[in-house]
Amino acid sequence: MRADLIKRKSEKVKNLNRAANCHRDNVCVDRAATAGFLSPLNSNATNGASPMDTSDLIAFAIFVAVMTSTPGPGNLTFMAIGATAGFRAALPVIVASQLGSLALNLSVAFGLGTLMADGGPLVNVFKILCLGYMTYLAWRIISLNIRPLDSVRLPSFWEGLLIHPLSPKTWAMSLVAYTTFLAGSDQTQFANGLILASGFISGGSIFHSLWAMVGVSVLKLIGEGPLMRAITIVMAVGMLGATLWAMII
Image (cartoon, helix red, strand yellow):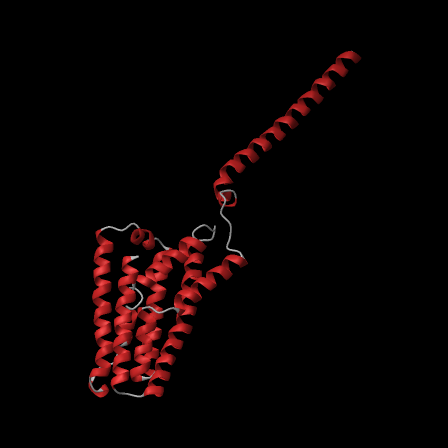
């Protein structure tokens, strides 16, 4: 009798242990299943991508400073406007150009840059539009000096909006910046677009303004006359040359 009681207690303990083990096994299975389900959410941490660190930001800032400070369709346009009509006339066009830069850089970050980089008929049409608009802008700049200023309409805010979206140089430097400094990070597209756009807007606002001020200084130094007209024509031709160069490379 006593032996039967001990045997029943032993079997009861075994059943309890088995139930506990099953419970533990179920928890382990659930954890494994949960880990497998959540693993795609953690894939960015293991696919080699990393957030943008301080050294990358510094390199990006240097790249933006170099690109936005060198001669190009925008800088030469603002210098020409400053040289013929003063900084106040150039300021609305500078502001408009930065709004155009914002739209362009966000477009690059959200995928339009890939389409442009692939080439094809669409890009060829875009290049023709770029060359046509820059030729028109060059003529507008030249006309500021070959005709009386009060009889010529200054470049408008709306014309400034198209300076960067229709500038091959701006597209090229935005694509290079995005692919070099941002595309390999695990940040969201929105974060990458914000960094790209804010960087170029900051650099553009500073250096476009400086180029316009240089134009104002040139006007004060040599005044109006044949030399000023010659300088304006050189700047307009240089703007077209910069556009063609960006289209070729």
